[in-house]
Image 1 (spheres, rainbow, N blue to C red):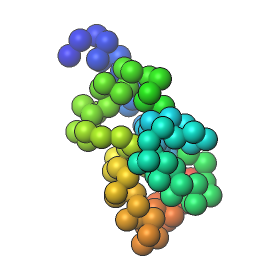
Image 2: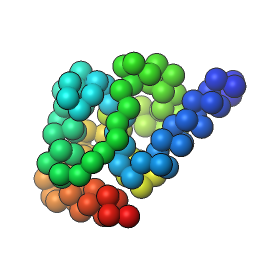
Image 3: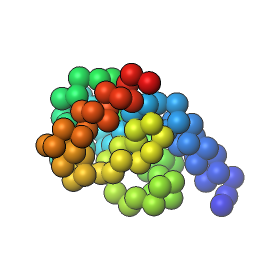
Image 4: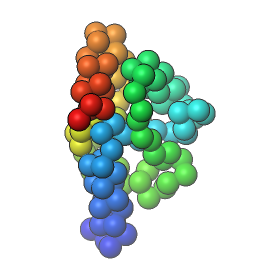
Length: 110
């Protein structure tokens, strides 16, 4: 791994570990830039808890390297309490069965 890759991996690790809930997405929660990011943001907003986000459109280093961090190839990617939860389909399933609300509330309370 190059120094640049090591630096970005360290940055991702710090972001994931210092934010109870963080979403790596295309765009912002106010202006998602793909349907998958939009649907994931809507599910998270329905939990009524704060969450951090990283816009991978403007942070090319993270966009190019995040798949190496948790071996997940697509965006968005949701991390809760330092662990990868998954992408849009998983998040939507969790939102429908109530798991997402519980997970996010527990992380926010910690």
